[in-house]
Amino acid sequence: MSLADCIIKSPQTSRDEFQNKSAAYFNLAEITELSLGVALFHGFSKMLICLGREPKEMETTIIQTPTAPAVSLSKEFENGNPMHVILSPMPNLRDRWLDLENSLWKNCSYPTEKLRVVRYRLSELLSIPQTYSDYYETVDIDLESDRLADQFFYDVRSFTDDQRNKIVRDYGLTGLVDLMVCLALYDGAFRLISMLGYLENPFE
Image (cartoon, rainbow, N blue to C red; front, side, top):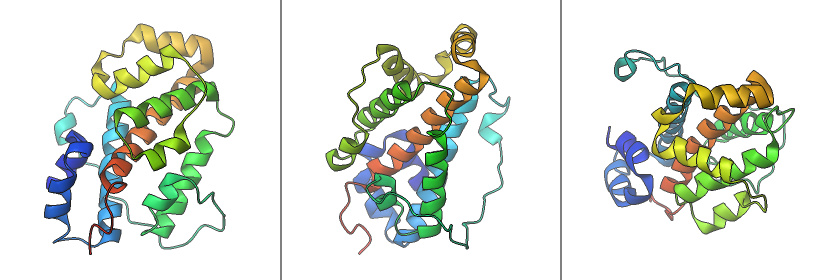
């Protein structure tokens, strides 16, 4: 529970608590797997709210915990991606994450330059280390995308039907889904990087 609280509430201000309480109970691979699970569940729960699909009893919603994959993917991935580094204690999980992340940027219905702005803004809001944030930096400027990222981060329940309908009119339903998946994925990823990316040999 302490680990989940650190990731969800304020990862960038909970690192000491995270290190002190978690290192005694879990090894690095276990911490990585648990942290990713919590971060993604949090991100995709927010995505459901954005889409107006929040379960009536969200606090008691139970989702079966998946088992970490045992078989490697026969693919090679860019090792400069920060998540390649952060998830390195779990190579099979890492490769599946990178495969999922890559799929977002292929055949995307929402403008990729806008998604890059959304992604970079989330990296700023979650205060990931400079060595990692440089990877996500973009020269693209889009105030609307900045506002969407801020809204997802600060007040996810403020998304309106009018906002969703406008995105569907402009980019189609798949465009709306692409945007929401981007917000959910990187909200989760950057919470993980914010927790683990600053720590040097945290479990030794």
